[in-house]
Each structure stands twice: as C-alpha cells, then as structure tokens.
Length: 470
Image (cartoon, rainbow, N blue to C red; front, side, top):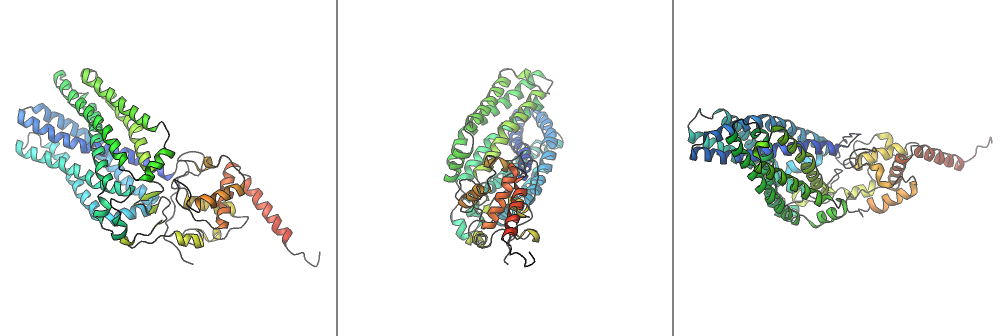
C-alpha cells in the first residue's frame, strides 16, 4: 500500500481552522501595515523637522513611536508567530511550499524586521540625545528596513495566488516564482492603504495633543495623507484586479456576493468622509473617534478584503499546485514535485492517507458515517466547518438533502472529476463517495446513518445462506 505524506487535520469545530487563521492574520495586517507606513511617515517628518527647525514634529514621532511599540510591535509580534503557528497546523504543505521556494527571502525579511524593531526603539529614545544627522539617518534606515519587510512578504503573497512566471513550474527558482505582474500591483495597492491605516491610527495619538495649533497641524497632515492614499489605493485596486489570473475573475464573478465591490467602495467613501471631517474640523478629533475608525477599517475593510483574497486563489493554497486540502494537484518538475491525483484516483484517500485510523480504511454499513466524517475532515474541513456555524458550513451546501444516492451522484460527477469552479478535484472511490454521502445526509438528519446501517445490515442478513438447521 503506497501512502502519501498528508498531515493530521487541525479540526476547529465551531468556525473552522481557516477563520482562526484569518482572524489572526487580519489583526496582524492592521498592525504591520500601520508600522510600515508610520516608519516612512516618520522619516518624512524627521526630515522636515530638522530642515525647518520644527522640534514639535520630533515630539509627535516620539509619541506615535511609543504608541506603536504597543499597538504594532507587541500586537504584531504576537499575531506574527500566531500566523506561523496556525497556518503550519492548518496548511502544513502550503507553508512547506513557501519555505522551500523562499527560505532565503524569508530569512532576509527577518533580518529587516530585527532592524525595524531596534529602529523604533532608537528613534523614540534617541530624540535629543544624539546629533540631528545621526538621528535622521537612524529614522531613514528604520523606514527603509520596514518597507523592505513588505517588499519580501508581498512577493510571497503573490506566489500564493500564482507563480510570477509560468517558467517556474518547469525550472523552479525563486526569481521566476517571486516576480510577476501581480507582485507589483499588490505592492502598490498595499503601499497606498498602509498610509491610510497610518493616518487613521495616527489620529489616536494626534487627538490627544493638548496644544491647539500643533494638534490642528498634525491632524491636517494625517488627513491629507489619508485622503491621498485612499484615493490612490482605490485607483490601484482596479490595476491589481486586472493582474489576477482568469480563473480568479471567474471566482469573483460567481462566488463573491454582488454587493462586495459596492460595499468596499462604500467603505473607502466612509474613510474619505472621515478624513475630510478631520481636515475641516481638526479640533473635533479625539482618540476615541480615531480608535473607532481604526476598528471599522479592521472589520469592514481589512477582513472582507483578506477573505476575498483568500477566496479568489481557491482551490489552491499556494503556487497553483497545492490544493487547499493539502493534496498536490499537479506536477512541478522544477521543484521535483509529482501530482498525487493519479494515486488517489487509483486507490482513494482511505488506503493512502497516513493518518486514517485502520478501522476506517474499509467501508462497512456500520462505520460508513464515521468514514464519511473522516473523509470530510481530510478533504473538506480546511475550507468548510463541519457544523452549522462558522466558515462555509458544509451542511448548508446540499439544501438539507438526505437522499444518499443523489449526494453520491454529485460527489462522483463533480468533485471526483474536478468539474467545479471553486473546489479541489477530490478523487473518491465508489465506497468513499457513498460513505461521504452518508455523512453529508446525516448532517441534515441525524437518523440517516442509523437507518442506512440497519437497512444494509438487513439486506446482508437476507442475502446470507440459510443454515441447514433452519
């Protein structure tokens, strides 16, 4: 029996592992993008402060930097490892694909991040303690190192959508995988919106300034930063969408709700209204208002945006060759990788998955529902919760259908052949398709599995040869 190297499945019953990863990642995006934007903003402010002899700008850098130590660098340093931990257990092969392609890029990112962390302490605590030229150099190095972390990560995120060049599949090499049209479009879009986040979060600090003239000056600087970056980000968003592969457009058209784009434009409109308000009436800005706006961006802007980005790369999780359920879906000669689909088509999941319990490797009427549950965990739970709540609940996709034969026909006609737009090709043997159908029907009616077992055991007893004693 040939086994494939699938890992144990992380099962989070209420919402699904994908949402756990998404919640952590969305919080991290707000913290990390704010810190990168603020680092470049600090470099600009420090340059103006020293050239125009405006020491109050250095005081704002110090205040905002101290705030970032908690908001971005503590929260970011918690959620960053949180992403690593959660994605490693939720999508071990996806993370493996990224590491094997970009290990040195990631190592470089960590070096830049160390410089960034040290830099934020230096620019805060060395204000007025070292000469102006040295402090300005430290501030510029801090800004460049922070932006370098984004440069590296964006290339990796773009690879998760699809490799930069088609030649990567045949030849490998991180340059082919890293650089593509989507890489630069995504970098430009995130650069614009990171300044938007910097302006909103900066309002929490600016709103607490006591000097009316200085507060007015800083609030207006942040408002202009936010207005320009939001408009630029909205324009670049269309460029980004046009760099996506054709199948991503199909997913957007068929899977994202019709209100998604108008809703996102509405969020951008609300952000612009907020900045126009603070520009016109800077004295009205208080930390609580800016905090509410930052939370609104997190919930209504970043969360839907990150969910959409995750959705449009499906059914893949990395490089257009690792399915969301961790199966290797195509040959990648450049990396010495072979598709596992032929083996699954020949033998199925039950005989090839390392961590299927031995008692579930053969389907019987008595264990069909448990086998189906195991198959749903292996093949479906990375994208669907197995309850009625959370991430795309699997129970909601069959309309309450309890007809095992109908469900089995769909599984064999669509999933097993890859004849779907959004989901991976899931090869199933006849017995596996029936077991999964029993499980799915049982989600709609918990008595289905019991009736199925009783009926088939009864048929087996009726078909058994009678004893001569009878």
